[in-house]
Amino acid sequence: MEIGYFELIISCIFVNNILLAQFLGNCPFLGTSKKMETAVGMAMAVVFVLVLSGTITWVVYNFILVPFDLVYLRTISFILVIAALVQFVEMFLKKSIPALYAGLGIFLPLITTNCAVLGVCVLNIDKEMNFLQSLVASATYAMGYGLALILFAGLRERILLARVPKPLQDTSIGLVTAGMIALAFFAFQGMV
Amino acid sequence: MPKTLVQEFTKGLWDEIPPFRLVLGLCPTLGVTTSMENGLGMGLATTFVLVFGNILISMLRNIIPSQVRIACFIIVIATFVTVVELVMQAYTYALFLKLGVFIPLIVVNCIILGRAEAFACKNTIIYSIADGLGMGIGFTLSLGALGAIREVLGSGSLTVWGDLSYSVASVFPSFQPFTFLVRAPGAFICLGLMLCVLNAIGKK
Image 1: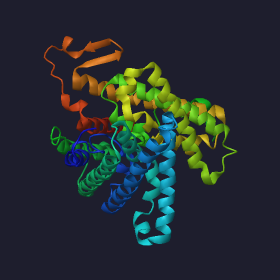
Image 2 (image 1 turned 60 degrees about the vertical axis):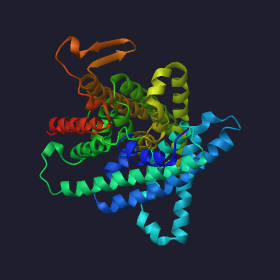
Image 3 (image 1 turned 90 degrees about the horizontal axis):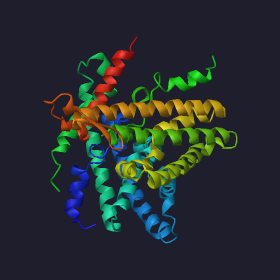
C-alpha cells in the first residue's frame, strides 16, 4: 500500500474513524459511555491492547500463517492471539503495575469481544500494510476510538440532565447523538 | 415455569429481538445495512453460526470446564465463522466482498457469545436449536428491515435479490433520494429512531 505516514495518521483518526465511519466496537461504545470515568478507562484499555494485538497478529499472519499456507485459519488464530494477549496483559499489569490495573479494571477482559480490536487486525492484513504501517495504523485507530468515546461520554453526561421523551430514552437517544457526532466526523471525508 | 419449545423460539422474534431489545451485536447492524440484501445476507450468516454454535456448545456443555468456558465458546464460534467465510467466498462472492471485514467479525458478535453463555451451556440440544433459530431469525428480520428502510429512503430503490429491484421514482416521480441515510451518520440515527418506535409500541 503506497501511502504516507501523515496521511495514514489523519485517515485513521478522523476520516476512517473506527467507531463512527467503520462501525466497529459499538457495543462497548454505548455500554461504557454513560460516565466519563468509565469512558476514559475503556479508551485507555483499547489503546493499550490494540497496539499490542495489531502488531502481534501482523507477525503471526506474515511469519506463521503465510509461510505454512494456513491463511484460512486467520479468524481463529487472531481471536486466540487477542484472547491470550488480553489474559497476559491482565496478569502482567496485576503483578507489576497495580495502579494501571486498577484504572483499567473490568475493561480489560471485555476487550476480547470488542470488535474494533479484531477488526483493525483484519483490516491491516486486508490492506497489505507493512509492519511499521500496521503499527502506526493500530495506534492511531485506537486514538480515534478513544477520541470518539470520550467526546460521546461528555455529550451523554449532558443528556442525563435533559428531559428526553420516554420512548427515546437511554440507548435510543444515545444512538441519535452518536449519529450527530458521526455527522461531524463526516466532514473530514475526502481530506485524504 | 419451564418454557415450551415454541416459547423459546418466539422470544427471539419479539420479546428479546436481538439488536433492539438486547442491544447487542450493534456493529454489523450498523455496518452492513446499507441495503436489504446485505442485511439479510449478514443475518443468515449469523443465524447459521448461532444455530450450529448453540448445537455444539449444548452437546459439549458437560465436558467443558467452567473456568475456560469462554475460550472454548470462542473457538467453537470461530470454527463455524470460518466455515461461513469459506462457503460465502465460494458461492456468493459479490456479497462476500460487500460484507468484507464484517464476516470474520461474526466471531465477536456479542449475540452469539451471549446466547452460548446464557442459554446453550445450560440447556439441551433441542431447546438450544430453538433458541438459536429464533434469535437468528429475529436478527435477520431486524437487519433486513433496517436495510430496507435505509435503501428505500437513501438510494431510492429496493433490491430484492440479485437483479430484481424496484425503483421508488417509478411510483413517486418527484422522490429525491436522501443520501445521508446510506452513509455512516444515517445508520446511527436510523437505528436510534427505529428503537424509539419499537419502544413506543412495546410499552404496554
